[in-house]
Length: 373
Ligand code: UD1
Image (cartoon, rainbow, N blue to C red; front, side, top):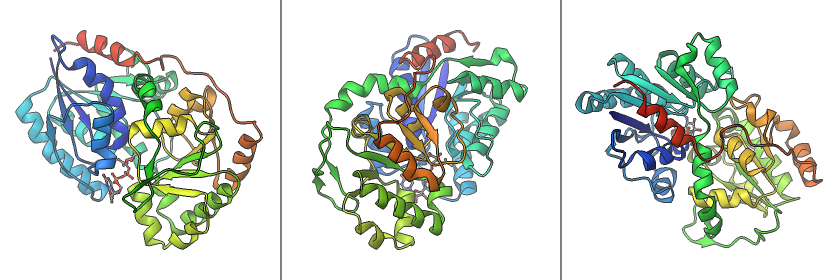
């Protein structure tokens, strides 16, 4: 069986890594790894291939950044050529980025069966581009692999038949389980944003006395007023506890555009650093007191690591991280009180959801072995 695995943006790489490791050398399944090039910076892409020992992609579509419509269209145009040439039996997409929806749409129109890993997650918020991608992908996929039972329920409500839904656990956690020992040995020295030299921060990483944050959602960082408000709150927090922020390129562009550098410079304990590779990032998070984020995947990683996570969003497509894990949704106005609670030792504790156990890739490969060709 020939299967194309699609990866395009940073959060996809942790999901395909464990699969590609099992499938390389598999006796009956032949994987072709396609990178769409949605993310292309060394720190947003290559570093993850290195850290996770993912072989170089068989094909790179090199689409780069553009508006949503243009990026999606470029991926479709190039991915169609790849599908016509490679004639795969299946296309497998992961997550909810533009590459996910674009490749699913392409495969469906060519009559190639599509498998969606991380199907069924819903924020029920169509102002998020990812929610549109999830809805489009799940409307036309053939096989649905989910990470939790709430996702199964969402798919059933959308009339997906039960025999096409497989709750097999969380691939991102496979990667975390596999890489955690190596991550904890990876030195923590980072380049500050816009400086080429790495520095050692004046922080004792063994004492859980700092917070980590990541912000890149358009809702939080594309609007000047909101981003300005956030910078002030980050500054306020950093007066109590150091905050380390590996800055996403989208956020960086907006900090420059909205001229927020001067405001940031007021806070000596607010460390803006270049985006981190996987191993350094996981090390940093695992030693932190808390994480402040608007990411999707980090809500899951903190749940596994039992680190309190404050998610600055009105909703989440990953409610299991709230029901069972360490995650809490929080509005901008409540960030400070959320951090105060954690500093008083009242951070959320949780448990690890079913099948978030490091063995999801094995279960998925078993499923693939039993599919019709
Ligand atoms: C994308 C995903 C989002 C995911 C995030 C993780 C969609 C709709 N969004 O958002 O779900 O959480 O990736 O990072 O698919 N840029 C660079 N270098 C890069 C990539 C991007 O400089 O390697 C800059 C470009 O200026 C680009 C901007 O960042 O315009 C945003 O990138 P884009 O891929 O459009 O969206 P993300 O915000 O990264």
